[in-house]
Length: 401
Image 1 (tube, rainbow, N blue to C red):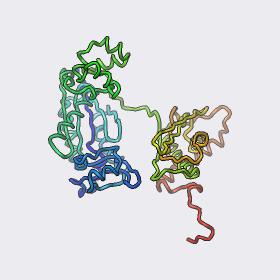
Image 2: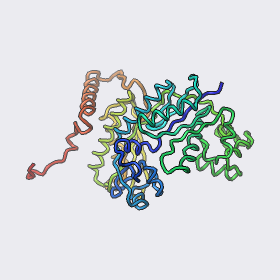
Image 3: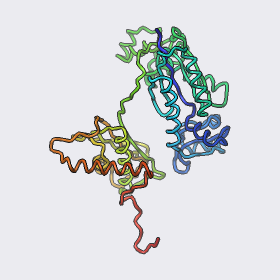
Image 4: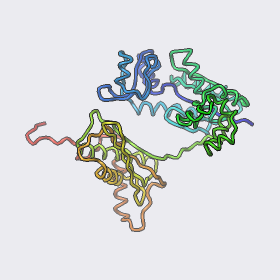
């Protein structure tokens, strides 16, 4: 029996959440992201802004040149998280087999439900549209690969017909997967990036149908195991399950400065703050990582990354920071301006902390209790409820309050 898989994608989600909070934004060109004078980047933009050529990841300064009347809003991550949780609750009330890919995207397996997949998709869309006031598009197919591509195609078709959110549903009936994919460009297929697309184009392969007709043995000869996957995907074959849990591979935080920074003290304070955020997220996830990585981007946009692996995993801010700051001291040329700085934690294990054979149990437990207390204070009163002394602005002795 064919599976029934849905791919759900919230349309311009950040903007939709903002417009739900402030209906006056509807119909206006606006973008979410950093200020243009501070080298901000577009995180999301309304469909009205897209008509001017504005798109995500574009420098905000360029977005404003394209659309002089563009309204710029700062990101409100708490608002988006809450709206996402509302959507995911609706999905999990429909089926327990939900694979959340990101804050605004998910797969659902509804194979065990009696209703047709299209009926379930239309009901989900209606509930999310009406109850949550959010536009959402869905792809419906017998597997994840085709459902995802169906959603992409449905959104593109709807966008050509209307200037607003697509709010589309595209259904590919079982048995029609290969016929649906055949006319599409090869770049629509998972696993075909720019380099693979260029190699396929050199062979005269331009559409997914061209790829499906190509001898599988030759694809394997040219691309190895990837060639076998390309041949299967081009025919619409995909047996991957909808996974209800995802393994977190890394946790990272980074910041881009308004102006390049050459002040070592400021760079170290910023790095320390990022380490605190990474550690806090690791503790929330119940994870500990052994590999700490730093990222430095220079004024010319070249990027340096360096990492070190500890003997034992950690989720403690101080231990993450100690490794990150040592890497920074070893690899930052004193005085070289930095555009972006970041830190990451990976190589996870769970449970988060296991005592080593010679570890001081009392000291370790005290550190964990202190860290938990600080987390609780920040959860209740905000990120800046507790600050390090080094983060406070030192007043001149003669300066009065």
